[in-house]
Length: 176
Image 1 (cartoon, rainbow, N blue to C red):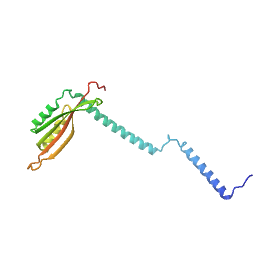
Image 2 (image 1 turned 30 degrees about the vertical axis):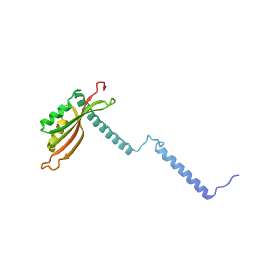
Image 3 (image 1 turned 90 degrees about the vertical axis):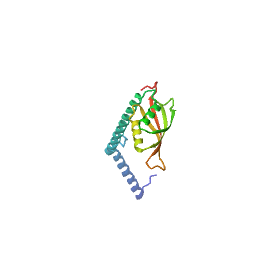
Image 4 (image 1 turned 180 degrees about the vertical axis):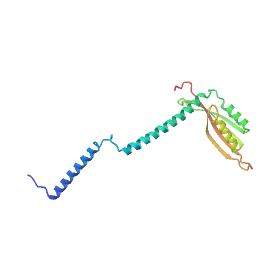
């Protein structure tokens, strides 16, 4: 029972055959269409992205190394309250209140102690000087919170500042 194909069916069959041949030739010239063969422009873009990520990693690692060095130089018995009080007195600041806080957990790689200070009637220049002293401290100090309010009904530009400063030092059992 052999049946002859109509003209329309022959054209459809021929078109499918041509499509199949073109499809196979396309994949043969592309090297089998595997994922290992990529467009050179895509590879160049991926290399640039990788180089950018490596550069970002190296910069971040350098920053972390600097922080680790500063933390390792911080003495375990660093007197944060005493140092902050001394800095405020030397700058002529009015320290209204200073509250100590212990924080951190066993899983943290460093110990942390902080103080919250209320400073009143200070200028912006005084605040900058205090922040510079904190930044240039031999211990690793970090401002974790700061709230600055302009003092109302003041002829000068005076500020009331609430600032929390933390100190970090390595745990004794830390390896690394």
